[in-house]
Image (tube, rainbow, N blue to C red; front, top):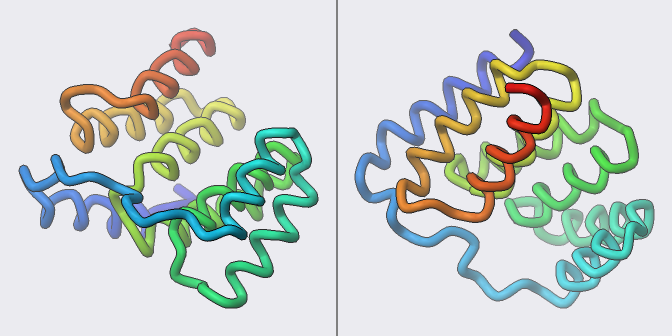
Length: 147
């Protein structure tokens, strides 16, 4: 399995977090660069978003939100290897990052690996037991994929 070391990190983070997972994620105010990149990605300008995020990450390489959006932009640009790397970086920094956990599930679906996408869904169920957008979105994507 490609993400064995990664999965161990995520599982360890989940086990150490226990019931404290009710805390919020990504509470910090997005930087202007992150807002710009988000707008670019929302507009489908993934190449521009990638450049903006690369510059941001040169200044702040520990920004899980930026790594997550970079992974999203790479995935939408069909650069799946770089998407994997970016999501892994986001989850190494913040193992409970809702967006990165959802998006890596979406990437599994993109590669036809419904079982691993379902495993990501189970992680999201632990991270947001009362439901969240990321959980609902991945659940819908899995259903559409026939899972």
